[in-house]
Amino acid sequence: MFKENYNVIGVMSGTSLDGVDLAYIKFNHSENWTFEIFQSETVSYSEEWLNKLKNAIHFSHSELEELNSGYTKLLASIISDFISKHNLTEIDAVCSHGHTILHQPQNGFTLQIGNLPMIRDLVNQTIVCDFRVQDVQLGGQGAPLVPIGDELLFSQYDYCLNLGGFSNVSFNENGNRIAFDISPVNTVLNFYANELGFPYDDAGNLAKSGNVNQDLLKQLNGLDFYKASYPKSLGMEFVNAEIFPLMHSFSIDVKDKLRTFVEHIAIQIAKICDKPHAKLFITGGGAYNRFLIERLRNYLPTTEVVIPDDKTIQFKEALIFAFLGVLRLRNEINVLSSVTGASKNHSSGVVFM
Image 1 (cartoon, rainbow, N blue to C red):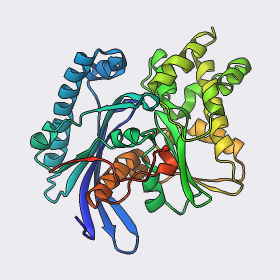
Image 2 (image 1 turned 30 degrees about the horizontal axis):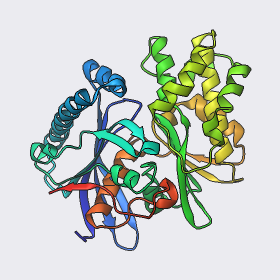
Image 3 (image 1 turned 30 degrees about the vertical axis):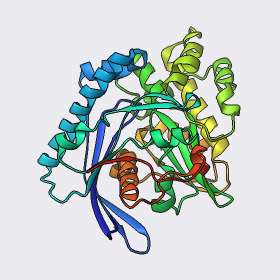
């Protein structure tokens, strides 16, 4: 499917459970890849679905099968409504990540729900989905997948940082694209904001009003994950097994926990993005956390921090999965072994025509 222009819908649901991100994008390929986001929106989950997705990590095999079927139908409905609402008629493909429930690459296993074959008939469009499984089968981490987009769409920046449920970064090192997860972000910040009765910490103001607990900060920074070399990736398993037990062991004010964790995030990112006079491109919901960005700037005084327009901040992952789908339709490499640790570069994703 080699063309110069592609009109596709990118669909992404992240671990922070903000909802389903959808973006209708036109890609052009002449000398270089360019893109324009035309329509975009986030569809929030109902309380029922939020609870299901939060608890699914504990589901049995049969419960997961039922969840996968139900979620595929939900996703198909959301996509169909998006197409109808915006009167989209020129669509080459819908490129959907699904929602990660289990991510255990060390056990050769990853599960993204919402990618069952029925989605093709429910949406009545070509679907490209399930981008992670093949990489895990090839010995990779199945993540992160965004770096090929950073390489081909945002090459003018030294570091591309996404602040979502987790922070992840990609950059060039010795001619290779390197990328990995750095630390949890909104998976933890949202949890403690919820404890205070807020859906999230707006602009980081709750954290800003707290104090750093130096002992907790030291123990967070001392976790083994941060000593491991890349490729490496994070899932809720890490947060539930390592972060929350440690955070819960401190009987301190919730705002102090938020303040300490923001400092932890900034320190871990600054350790990685440490090239002097660099350009750091930041996307994801955490880009709106002004206090976190302020702490990052504190640790990276010579770095030019670039925060793009709202559409790119909010929908970069949907944009990239749309792009991964286009590359898959062209049978071009969309997953880099230098990033995931797989045995080879490859073109990943299942196509339902």
